[in-house]
Image (tube, rainbow over all chains, first blue to last red; front, side, top):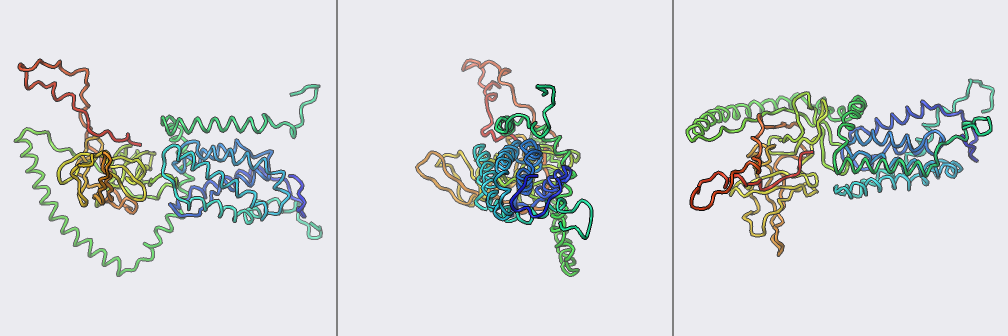
Length: 173
Length: 318
């Protein structure tokens, strides 16, 4: 855990099983058949970006590649399409982590938005080169809803680390 | 690891540089993309991963099922009774036609027998339900609740009550993926019902189809019905596919013929997976063709009929 200028609370170290549990839950959310509903965020990209920013030493491109393949199979997309996008997303998020963590969550979201958008643009490019139909501009709305979800997600995923190690009503933090 | 007798503390041990790792992963992903999109080498990997993912997918589909079934839960008794009465009426009408059909089918068999023609092809069908649309936004695909264990096979035609809606493109153990007719470049060989003209229909996007590669002066009019020709050996002949909507004859060599699918391609929930009960006889091998007899001696030589190729060769299933 890196120090941030805004961390008024001392966080507990992250538990690796929680990281992977949240990634798996995001995978399940990604596989919910929403059909052609516009603006459904790519949950896995969001959670992956979060952990890549938060824990660059533990979560990175390998995790992105693995979960990308699973999404490819689940969506019936081209094998490697999501894997490629998530690897680049993880690389970008890992690189950004030292900078992004100094900002409060709402401003972190602004840093993440171009990354999410880049992920989608990359997938569109890959599929267009392969001869698929352009999915329409609504496809990109998913990145913006994802950005809006960053702040609640930030709170939710850090909840286990907010807890004190042992409960004590008299302790200041 | 240990240069001067100490092992490197784990915090400094980060493996290869991030950029190197990025390049390796990107190279692997690009290789996989080419192998999958161009050569379809990765089907085995996809199948095995899909088995692992199956319980996850089932869990994820539950909320969608709930939403879909909500309308059934809240249907009123009156509505159900009305629908029941309608269905009874429908069954009577259909039953009458069925008797007629059986009689005509027998008659047809007898006539074919008299003429010495091959018997008509028997169809095998599996009833299935559309579970949901696949999440991939770049293609038009749906998932059916029947798979390899129910006898579904890749390449089979999927029809609803009014016409063809697509083709099975991937089969999983208990599910299958159907590529809809409106998917870009999904092809289906057809004939024009009015005059028997053969062609191939391709998906054109925006819910439309396009009858391609017909010359500008081809005899196709708006309103013509297109049926499957069955020339590909996969589809049964005579299934309704589409109706011609607009014909543009510019100065180009080919007419631009736009059609609308007859089946509820993007709306049907209950479908039939149709296949031939037995496959077509194999194509004749050109190497086995009899030598061409010089003119004047063997006018009716069988060699004349051997060189006939299929007029349209649609995209392979999947």
